[in-house]
Image (cartoon, rainbow, N blue to C red; front, side, top):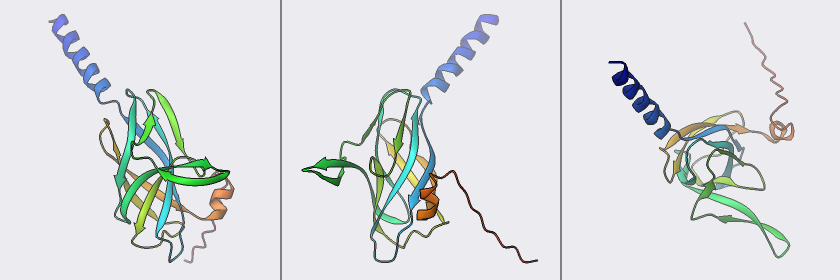
Length: 157
């Protein structure tokens, strides 16, 4: 009986290990103004599973979602799509940040207004899809590195 319980338990542990995945956190986007048809999303990705890749996504706020990076080309910084996806090494944290890797929302259906949130579904090569809530930030939120939250809530009773 004891051995059977151990076998069941180790089976559960293996199943849990197989479910290890990529965890997205601190997802945020820059606000956009009317007329802008694309926007960038940034976040932390923690991969607790074997090497994987972020290969795309979808969101109700955009026509399409691509993974982009900034590269230096002839002394100019430019953005380019990563059709092979963003490699996510095993057991490492990868940061998507301005001037580096980011998720690009293409064909925005409406401006991203500061203070709003929207869902973004991330697609990985191996890990299951994951939907995160993206917080839209204004330049003043960004300037503080996200650590200085000045909330001016005026409640009228």
